[in-house]
Each structure stands twice: as C-alpha cells, then as structure tokens.
Amino acid sequence: MVNKSEILDHAQVVDVNGEHVGIVDHFEGEDKIKLAKSDPEAGGKHHIIPFSWVKEVDDNKVILSKSKADVENEWQSA
Image (cartoon, rainbow, N blue to C red):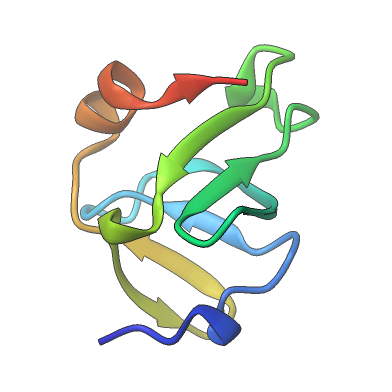
C-alpha cells in the first residue's frame, strides 16, 4: 500500500507503462491529487486524479495503475 507522504509536490506521474501523464501540483483534500497545469501534457489546465489510482511511488515518481489513455479519459478538469 502506498503512503500518501511518499507523494511529493512536483513529482512526475507516469502511467502503468511508464509513459508521462503529468506532474503533481499538490493533494486536493484527503484522496485526490491535483496535477500541475504548467506541464505540457496538461493543456494549460489542472486535472484531478484519485489517490486510489496510485500503484506505487518509486524514486519520487508516482506510478499509476492505469494506462495514459484511461487516465486522460477519466481525470477531472479543475
């Protein structure tokens, strides 16, 4: 199980295949991660993903349990 304290602001977020998805801006509430809008992948918007999608954290890299396509279909714009 992933400890939320392992997820640091500005950490890279990658999909289950290692493809770049975004950059952590900060935690939003208890169970959501806000991705930075300044990341080129974000299209100038913040996006919110649930903490439950985090599979593991390795060397300040947040690895999700979903593919990039699934993440982009399911994330919420903020």
